[in-house]
Amino acid sequence: MAEQDAPLAPGLYLVATPIGNLNDITLRALDVLRRADRICCEDTRQTQKLLNHFQIATPTESLHEHNERERATSLVASLQAGARIAVVSDAGMPGINDPGMTLTAAAIAAGVAVFPIPGANAALTALVASGLPTTEFQFLGFLPEKAGQRRTRIEDLAADPSDSERTLIFYEAPHRILDTLADLEAVFGASLRIVVARELTKIHEEFLRGTVAGVRTQLASRDRIRGEITLLVQAPAINRAAADPSTATASIAERVARLQSEFSIDEKEALKRLARELDRSKSDLYRELQREHAARRKRV
Image (cartoon, rainbow, N blue to C red):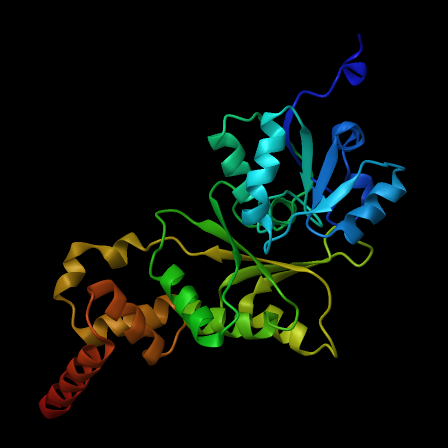
């Protein structure tokens, strides 16, 4: 019996769907969607467009962030009874910043077989074409919507450098991208290398590569910023020379100056970063910095 004629094994199927270009659907994904008992969708209306395009008549039902937890119990019961259930998000891989993770964990805990059906993913698609390091990368989803929380998250990332250069990958909304880039520039410095990947695999696909200051200027000059955005940041590696224990004897002014020079940031941001490094309050460091400046003026 040919593989495509064999009954689909019972279990949960996590099916990747196109992120833009419908031709990016895999043959295996189409086969599973056709032969599953039902398809759980983030948005049934969105998925129906895909199913209609490929003439797939499998029944659909909703599974989104607001009902996944409560629906997991009944779905797992169906799976334990031998059902074949496919899960899709609106685009890309289920569970990656989309519904699917909770159901998958519940199915595994219940001893149900889980089958990943790989395919398109915006984060990896952007990464491989970004020109930024691919050996070490970190996917962080969406940054917080609130300005203060977003800035704090970026500062936390800057305070936790890696031994080697790595790429940070975010999803971002077009109406927030300029504010996010401004925060990145303030925290990491104007020379930070970034890539904005917009409308991946679609007709208006675009990659903007360069410094955060340069890309921000490009985008700010546009009347309107549209489309789904993947933002990639080349986080600088820790500077071993700067982190050497011998710097412990350096003054606060010297350390602040080093950070300003290394990251192209202002004194205020350098003080914040140094406070995190030393686990001290910024106000204490500021007062110490002022005392050093006063002592230096007296010597002069």
